[in-house]
Length: 309
Ligand code: CDV
Image 1 (cartoon, helix red, strand yellow):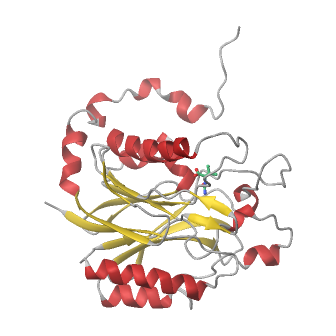
Image 2 (image 1 turned 45 degrees about the horizontal axis):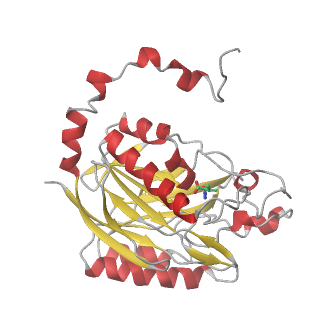
Image 3 (image 1 turned 90 degrees about the horizontal axis):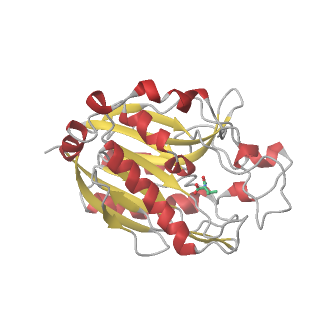
């Protein structure tokens, strides 16, 4: 058995006025729990350090940049890295990244147990819009504040396995999982901030949104025979509710641990990476069964074009 004891560190709401230091204090409390339970890896959600700021329309780039991190670790997150290193636990954490040459990404990182960043992923599938949209009940301006990730979907040999990352909306796209599946991924860690309400369809039920949340990660895990650790930022942020439902999914697509609250909550599971083998060697043995001669449209075409009438 190659087991990673993983902790999914769901975060409750973070208000606009909350400081990075206050958030990191909450993250440290979850880290303490994970250390107490002997975890190898703790996974925090998308944009862990701040409120989900893309819901706010801003025109002043200097103001926008206050939501971004120019270095990782930095002064605010150093205590997290220091504690993780002292207790030999790996971290995965989402944050808004501002690069030295001025690029903006929605980023997730993975450290090893020595605190070295061994993996960086930048969100590819940015949902929402770039300009103020008066038709929506609230804004979702990721396309305004971030550039699409420029690193693809890499995987890393870490913690004795093959690990990949994704960020929120990426989890809804089968391509995300398959590109990593084609690199033999054994565990995908991801975080999300998913509004409980559809800004363009008020009547969409919260239950349906939770169903979709789980459907996509369960399908991705099963179809690629890997573990998926899916971690929410949840609860009501400045009047805007986010779904919870953080889950750890096994390679059969079954949820083996799920958060019960909408607050800061740790869920833990021993993930045996060897449990990915059976699916990878049988029904999802890609080398034996895939038919790439029929998949060309996937990379040739972006939008759907129905056949002529
Ligand atoms: N942060 C996100 O990427 N949220 C999207 C919402 C807008 C649908 C999600 O896929 O959950």
